[in-house]
Image (cartoon, rainbow, N blue to C red; front, side, top):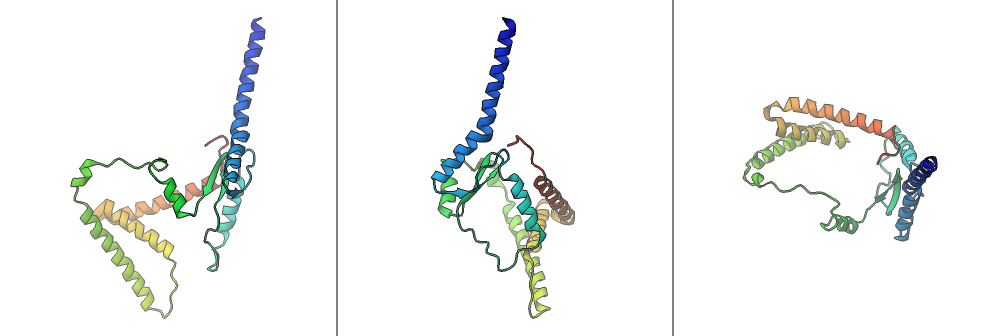
Length: 207
C-alpha cells in the first residue's frame, strides 16, 4: 500500500512537472504568438526550445564583419516580433504606440521617486558649465579638422563616446577628470566584453 502511494505520488510529480515544462516551452509561447498575429503583427514562428537566440547570434556576428554601407536602408518598415528564448520581443516604430505603452497606467517603465533634497541642491549650474566646456572642446576639435582640409569625413560615433566620457568624468571627478576618463574607457571595454560573451552564450531555462 505504501509502495503504491509512493508510485502514485511520483507519477503525479512527473506529470505536473511535465505539464509545467510543456506550458512554459510550447503552449504559452504558441498562445502569445497567436495573440500577436491576431493583432496584425508579423514575425518569426516560435522555435522550440530557445526561439531565435541562435539565429540572432549568427546575424549579429555577420553584421559585425563589415561596416554598413552609406546607402543601407536603416529606416524601420514594419512592426514585427522575434523570440528570445520563450519570450517574444515586439519591435515598435510607431510613436503613438510607444507613447501609449509608456503612459502611467501600464507601469512598464519604473520611474524613480522624487527626492525632496534634490530641490535644494545647487549643482545644476556647475554641471551646465561643464557640459558647455566639453561641447566647446569638441566643436573646436572638429573645426580644426575641417579647416585643414577642403573636404572632411568624420566618424562621429567614437567622437561622441569620447564626449560622453569627458562629461561624465568632469562631472563625477572634477579636476581629476583624466582619471575619470580612464575609468570610463575601462568600463567601455568591460561592456564590450560582456556583449561579446552574451552573444556567444545562451543559458537554458533562464529568463
